[in-house]
Length: 274
Length: 317
Image (cartoon, rainbow over all chains, first blue to last red):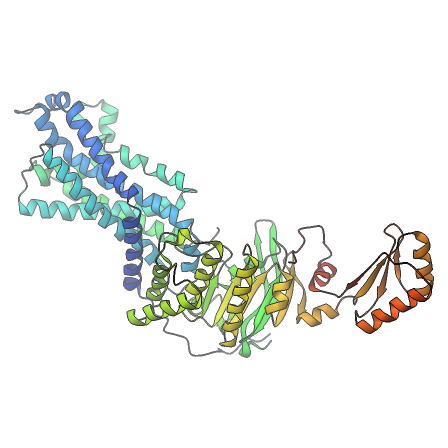
């Protein structure tokens, strides 16, 4: 058999439009969130419950242990809020893993794969949607923190820097989460893969200073990525010294974002097997 | 191979999943503007064929061109030319019907106004206007399948793959789907249709290929396939062995079944030949309990060709 000459009409415009397609997919994901708000409500509710729990149940005792001049519950609100903010981000990205895993069980993903679209837009739609969802969740959680006595020292510049840092952090963790959602064999599995992300703030400087931990744990706590991330947040919001934490935190974010992005793309482009 | 005029051309397509050979050397040639039906039982490899030809999975060996583009080297060009409506509905359940169509219009980069008009027309054409504003999760199976196909059509594909488009639909929805397919073909689109319903292939397809365990065992028009098997016959059932014997002596070249007390008499099923047969029996006063006429249908063809009537028999409805 000879190779056929190109047949048929001239090929259609075969350029890809990743930005346009990503915007379309973002609209799709935002519609999902608006129409089925229960996941968003749960993602916002959980950090708020933890905030109230830590401030009103544990706050008096833990605050006394901080050893500051003021001490007590008021000091602890200021100490724990950056950790709760981080927890809000990890809760949202856990939701991303669930949404991605759910989406992949839908037949429409197979349709997207047979269409001439920028494939990555299926993923970027989720990423951008989650960043917007995180911004909303963070606004609510920080609002509640302010109501229960959170008194940040940050000025306008500090808040802008905090916002920028949180966007970078969310972006990085979401890409990781999109990959985790894809490797999950089921939606139930996807709801568990984010657990370590939720636990890590506890095994760092999130809820208590690392000095109070036993040696082995302290070593882990000081080197795990969430400790510099929390210390950076704390520094930006409370004016505590940031030191090299910001650079380390941004380095981790860049690393996680790049790794998550490459892993996600690779997973999505692997042979369709459903 | 006439790839110049072919919408789909394939040679030697093979695909295995582990040790399990699903496609064992498939050759296809589907002319532009025709309906080609791939007929087979569950597990014959129909869906795998569609997945390979629609770029969802890669074949292990062989080559194929779809809409004039090589599947391996130009998958993007293939994707730009095809539309796929799979066995499992490829719709977004959380969006409304209209939003699903708008989503497709946006992904095809249609200008907003054009996309809206096109969506509106498709909703009308597919009888979904009333349900357009409801979430797809509330749709019936038939509505979902119609929406699925409507979404495929938003991009005006030149080649459409329909993988078991009517499986699970009620008879009325099935006929509606057939009508839609006919209209599409009238508009010059090429349809590659898989089905396990012989009636469907007979109704719609210009050419039919029978797929059995990953191999094409026959290909041709419905009439050509029907001609490949022994012709029709009349089946006579008698009350007792005496009648059976008498009729067998009278009619000569027949096949008899002593247990069922039946005779199969070759016949074209025409009124004249039936009358002749009945007159001959009547002359000898042979009592016949029951008479039935059998014209060959694709069921006979399928069973004759695949020879596995008990193993996941093809359904004829």
